[in-house]
Amino acid sequence: MRKDTPSATAEMVCSWRALEATLPSRQRILNDPFARGFLGPVRRGLVDSSAALPIPARRALLRRLDQALQGVVTFVLARHRAIDDLILATPSDQVVFMGAGYDTRLARLCERLQQSVVFEVDHPDTAQRKSELADAVYADAELAPSVTVTVDFAEDSIERRLCEAGLDPDVRTLWIWEGVSMYLPEQAVRDTLKLFTRLSGSNSLAVCDVLSDPRRNGILAKTQTHVLEVAMEWIYSEPFLWHCPRDQIASFFASCGLTILEDFGLDELVGRYEKRLHGWLEAAPSFRLLISEPK
Image 1 (cartoon, helix red, strand yellow):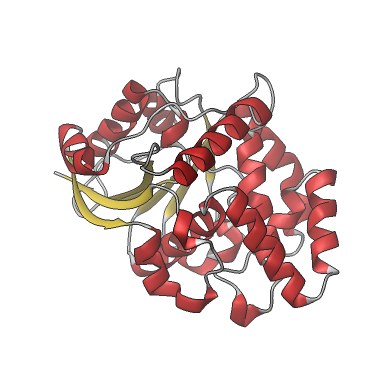
Image 2 (image 1 turned 45 degrees about the horizontal axis):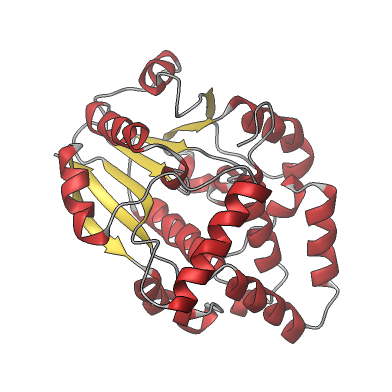
């Protein structure tokens, strides 16, 4: 990300949730009524323009966007919904959102998160912008209490910052690391996964997504992957830095002290949410959503 600026990709994925919220409830993968409030004027204007279109045109807009980004929009929305479902179904003493961005679960999943101590970890610039907008975005909505921890994943001691903020390393913790690992160097990914192992009590879980096999076979797939990589680097200044081939994911996590319990790709998420998904599956991205536990 650009120095001294909030994350552009955090706002980008927030805009996809805001676009999704313009669809009728029966056609949504998830509903995030707060996402629009965290958008800058350009993206907010695009969302408002979309909301003014007939419903078939709104769906077509999301589909075309998904095609341009080789299925990433569908994966991100389905990933977010799957993590929502996991949080609701998983008791924990602590929930840690690593790279929280413009996550709105403190409001959307308030009742569940009130049962845990919640930490939101993010880069100082993104965390500051979110804090500045939060009062207006949430207005009268009830929020689960949380602790904000500012950190640079690639440079700072996340462990020290979390412990100083009050994290208890001996209790059952649910780690949510969503949409971050692919933007970090491999060593930073390893260090973060090992941190989950060190700072977790029994029955803890870690949830994260991984970019695997980005250079798939086929001219179409390679061309679309190249377009996506160029967009991330030159438009958002947040290039992909790390990926892990699918057949090496389990061993990579094991070397960091984690055992993979579940591994979802877009096809598996389609099985969960069926016709509410509107993506272009022929070019679905090589992203995996992983649920793991410390050894």
